[in-house]
Length: 156
Image (cartoon, rainbow, N blue to C red; front, side, top):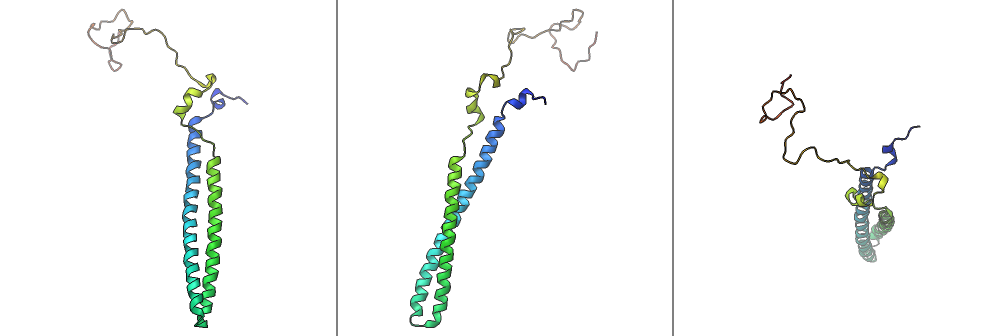
């Protein structure tokens, strides 16, 4: 199996993109669990206060005892949901903290090993900056002041 040079060099842009996608997904989980934890806690508080009110009212009217029992079950259920969402929230925050950071590619350039750095070869310039080059063809009848263009159909 022939392994080319390109396969040996890690794709840092792809690693950064994968890191950002993973981080966005985890942040989405954190925000979703934050929201549902808050909703469940608020539901627990509302159901708990409603249950206390209904059970207090059921002292004088026993027919309200069933409503108080239903309120107690809803309070228990919303408290369980709040605990579950909070556990998911803690797990998502831990996952976000453990995610290895992949810095932007620009920040990685200075730290690249020598075998991963591509250098462009440089030679002495054929002409000074601002000087136009002429064709090397001696038999050219193009005036000296004309610029040569690839679109010209002048042939010898």
